[in-house]
Image (cartoon, rainbow over all chains, first blue to last red; front, top):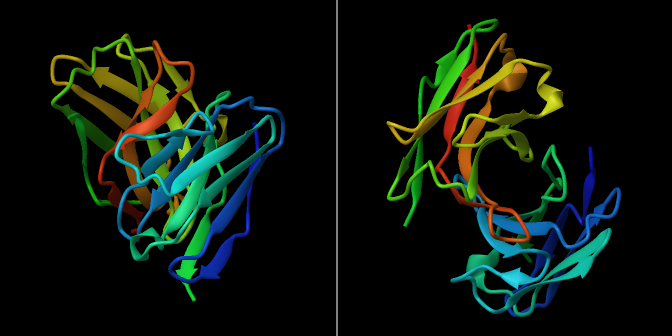
Length: 107
Length: 123
């Protein structure tokens, strides 16, 4: 199985801050990396697919980059509605696997 | 747009079989462009992919579940189902169904997801 490791596991930030979350795969997954946002009591929501493609309807302050084993999710200017937990997920091979999550909290 | 909705018992006894159904609306489960997946999330923890089924009935299961999983599809009802046998407290989780885009795209992703249903394993 491909292991997905996210860092940090949590962070505190203020509205307007630039936030970066990293995700590392245990082997190369090319660009087969997706990012999801999950708010308490809700299902995950797709933000980014194919490492850098923004899902329709997702604000442009979200962006993704990377290829191979190292990936980044960036929120360019944190908004109040962005406080949530973020997960990366590889779709390179089965079984599909997720990172452990990064909780973004209000400072 | 396509919507998914999970249904099934919220409480299952240890050693019994957990059974859930996902109903797909505003779209056909028989489209060849999608896999239909189950994903679970224990309370306060991360996400675990359980497996997927194609409309034809072909399946892939996560080996971590050690042969306890069976997925099935009913195209006439636009539903797919999960059975997890010999459950223990460790199977207590929110269970989500989700559509995985495949087919004509290079990359795959899960979207949309159902709202999730909490299943508790307890006597």
